[in-house]
Amino acid sequence: MRVLAFVFTALLTGAFLPDCNAAPKAPSASKGGWSTSEAPSDPGDPAYAAFEAGNYEEAYRLASAAAQRGEPQANTLIGELYEQGLGVHQDLKKAAEWFTKGAVAGDMHAQFRLGLMLAEGRGLKKDRRKAADFFEAAAQQGHTVAAYNLAQVYVEGFARPQDMGRAAYWLAVAAEKDHAQAAYDLATLLRHGDGVAKDEAKAAQLMAKAAELGNLEAQVEYAIMLGNGKGVPKDEAGAVKLLRVAAERGNPIAQNRLARAYSAGFGIEKDRIAASKWHLLARAAGQSDFRMDLFVMSLKPDERKKAEGEAQAWREETAAAVR
Image (cartoon, rainbow, N blue to C red):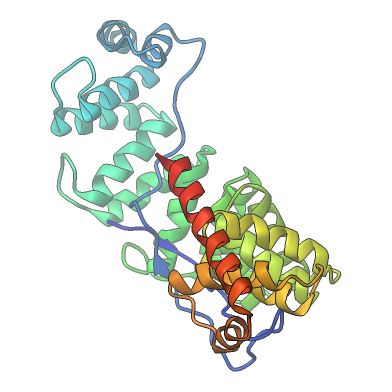
């Protein structure tokens, strides 16, 4: 099961000027499946403390005793141990059973995890409608990632009828709790008026928030909004600064936009070498730009050699950083 994400990445034709004829991309599937990043650990719970410390057998013993006392979160922890095979033999069926106990007892983390297993068909039969019900139960209690996944349910239109208005509602809930992808997705809906009233200013606020939270696509999109003055005062220097952040993270669109900025002097001093370096990197990543190809062809041999050297140095530094 893969979660849909709203990705309408703008491929611009000018330094910051949008192609008015370009249609936004349809929602595409995000990598990695359903989002699961919301830790249920409670620092005051001895079982969870043992779990966080890596003492899984002790965590199982303490959680089992707590479950017998009727503590809902203990069921969730036992389910986690069985799902991951930590301190016990991995058993997805047992994990689902324990998550079910926790969900019935009202623990939002168990409801969320059971929703994941139902959505993916892990440990029990796949049932996307039931998964949506458990996501909603968890979201109603304040589970951020459940709210985001519930929004995806309404986008997909499979487990429940497609409803972009409801999707936007749950995205807003998740975004309010600093879920970066939710903020980005909701900003995209607001920009296009999909399920909500079109609002460039609010879209810019949310895009800025997503960018600040580290969402790479949002960093690129907000830089473009700054450069164009869409929903926010025009700030070419701020746009270039953010493009550099995204370019250094390896985004080819940002690399190409940054190359354009350096070549034309938009928001930054002209630099033929830097422009060519970033274009070479963007082109190697599949981002074509005939105008920048011509720009690089205009370099003198020593300039071309220096730009290629800087591009290669960037590749090597980036490769070393991830090793």
